[in-house]
Length: 177
Ligand SMILES: [Zn+2]
Image (cartoon, rainbow, N blue to C red; front, side, top):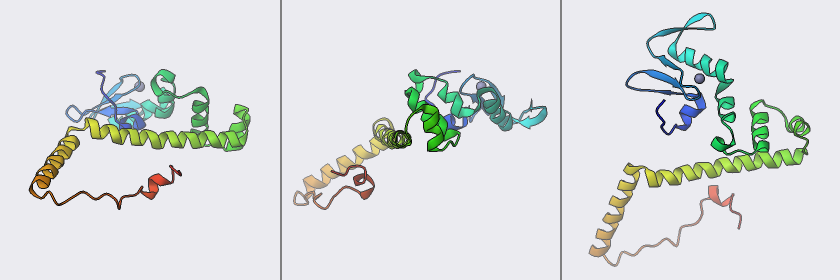
């Protein structure tokens, strides 16, 4: 399989879909099913989509375990983060998870809190990278910046006033100082 950057949606479901060929491709092993054709899965005749869903679940224990087993070098999660995530995936309560990991319930809560913080930070990193890597967005920004330059040279009195700006409550709740 040719390497490409997978979208979150593709990682969540565990396969890619080629819009031109209609080929569905498992991101873990490269198995392919073609839309419009029928396949035998679990002893029945099923669509390509169903065959792929069952493949990801039956062959890789689902996309969650498929990704977890890619290892630290790929997902970057520590052993305890992996244990916490797996516990959340299996819907274990904090007490059960704490007993199994030999840590206190408070530590389980802290670890979960840290994982949610990582999620928030990861999403913000994605949004910031999008500003850098998405050409449409950066071209639009440059256009608006040039437009502002022109306006300023025509109307120098129109100064910029950001004094009314303050941190949106969504962000200030994570940044109490
Ligand atoms: Zn596969």
